[in-house]
Image: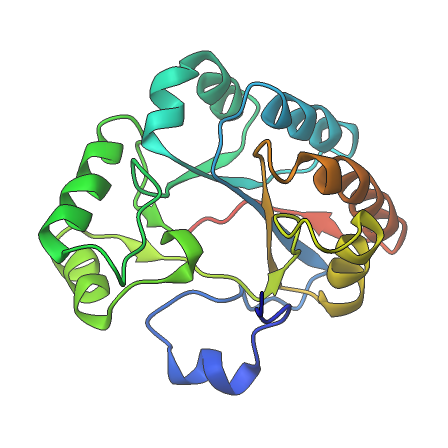
Length: 207
């Protein structure tokens, strides 16, 4: 499968209504985790984050919050931010607009946040505009994609994707899911360790 590890700056400049990074003069990184909460992956992530006093942003699926409300509550209790990632992980380019928006709003019944990340990063311009203008969402994309979901690459490659492409202000995507857990469990501790040793802080997205 083809995907960009780092979003080119020219592309993010052309799509300014989406949030791709957080401009900062400080050494801050913005870790984000999609598709949870998951019964194994999310507690692992929370444990690793706590070791570094790190904050992050969890873009949750409504159906998973419904299934694991105690893990969702723990995310909030430990000081992290949350965002809406739809209820059923729908593709915004292949789902009828009214069905997609209804799914986002279904998730909003479980996720109290105006941050929204479309699954796969796929959403039409018109749907994005409706979510922004009519529902007040800030649409958060990313600058660096770890590739932890890609089972054709090694956990070591996932680590390198993040360490070689991230810089101050980068929004980085991992996944707290069963599919990504092998790569995540290897790469995340090293990402936290290596960047902490360089003086970076890990912040949640606050918009």
